[in-house]
Length: 252
Image 1: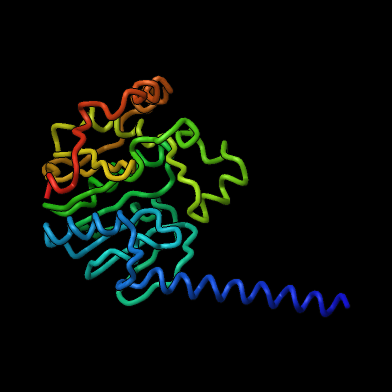
Image 2 (image 1 turned 30 degrees about the horizontal axis):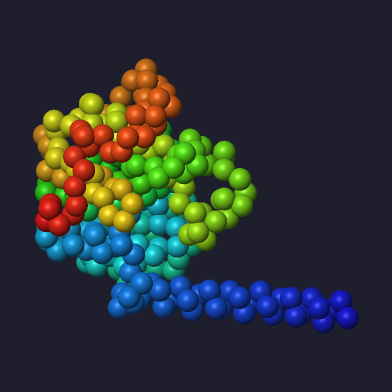
């Protein structure tokens, strides 16, 4: 009886995996109507700029990645969960390791990795230095919808919340906003930027980056200054005016 139950349990697990893979294949198909809003946004920008070399930091299951239409797409994620197709290139490593080795410049970089202040700050600096002239950077989840989603560390979330994040049922937005405050104070005169508002999902777009300079990570003293949770309090009244809140159709 135990053997039969074990076989039945294994069969259910295999069937569940097959169903997931089939669903994933259907959802990730370019012609699928389920292309994410972010992928549509990126495609609109790529069509406007003519960019064909795309980099995504933080791929997860790849729902956005597969919906993006670019000639060459590169994904970076230490825990890749999708199968590469066509000209897709995957680097199963941290973004820090990737940028240390990277020698390529990109037309478009989407930053959607670990949503913790120190990490996303490094991702932004490295992306600024890896962008082609005329390229665009899009940073995800720059404005938290609530205090729960603004939890500073991934480790501070419950196991149930982490499970929901992996399944796409909970949007953990972390403290990305602190990195935005910092880069706008230090580098706002070196590029154009705007906060794109769409269905209560906020992303920052950076373009026309001054390629005459190399961007460096600020000192630990400066970084520590933005660790203060007081910055979250300042967001209670909405997007700061300096963040240039707008809609994508006004930009392209």
